[in-house]
Image (cartoon, rainbow, N blue to C red; front, side):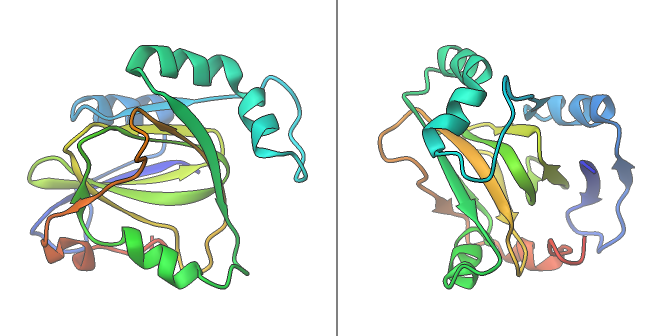
Length: 182
């Protein structure tokens, strides 16, 4: 279930609020400039579909966002529990960072935990199949896919470089529940 927990960034591990209703989650995230939507495929998906077929299944929604934000490309990324480099991929995203561009992810399958740090609170959003999240440029955040990642996402980019992070050096990420603890 898509879940949002909001924590004070200095007050330990007890959330000040928890939301599971998508409209309430959207309202809370909109207040800090983050967009969440639910998408549905325009045809049935199978495990053996190509990346192009997956994007085609969401073409209307992908094209709408590409036009709205000026995205130049879309791709599909997937990680399964048996991937030999899963620990290295996980570590890459666990420290607080920001980007000069939007970070947009649509969960075709599986789930992942975004931590958003726009002010003196941390918004922990467990995204699941059907969820799109758009993190605005320059928002501090991090991401945890868990010890045994299992997700497939469509990513959208405005620059050819794709995902480029500027790490903040703040150790805050270590103070919050991991994906597996959430």
